[in-house]
Image (cartoon, rainbow, N blue to C red; front, top):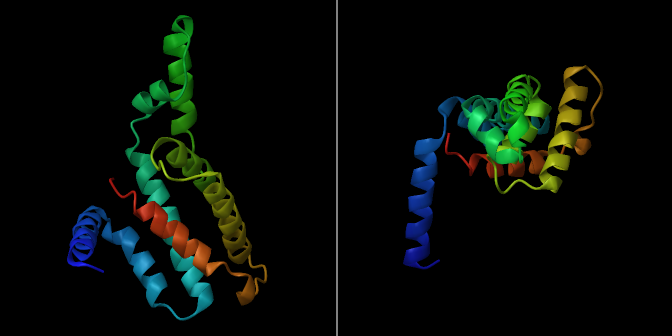
Length: 155
């Protein structure tokens, strides 16, 4: 790398560092440091989960709903209220992940949503006591998705 590339990386990393929540980023760090694949997977997933809830709580629901759909003038008030209620009533992780992907994380694509669903399916299997083989754990995918989401860290 040349000096300009190194400088650019340092500047962007220091900006990212200032915006990261320590409670969330510690799980990512713990995943990086962990040797056990089960723990790695769970730490990266926990990072995704906590960050999703964190971002969702910061969304300005009124503003985001107005920009999301073309509401007819005749239903401007009631339709907007309905959309805001739908958004605010999103309690589970999958719903919130979708809302954050639609409204905040501009680089998240359909493939990322599919990856998230698969990661969640595996995490749910683990948390419900099902046997999951270490070889089945997509640790790399969980790490990459967590890293991608953290790169949007403006909240």
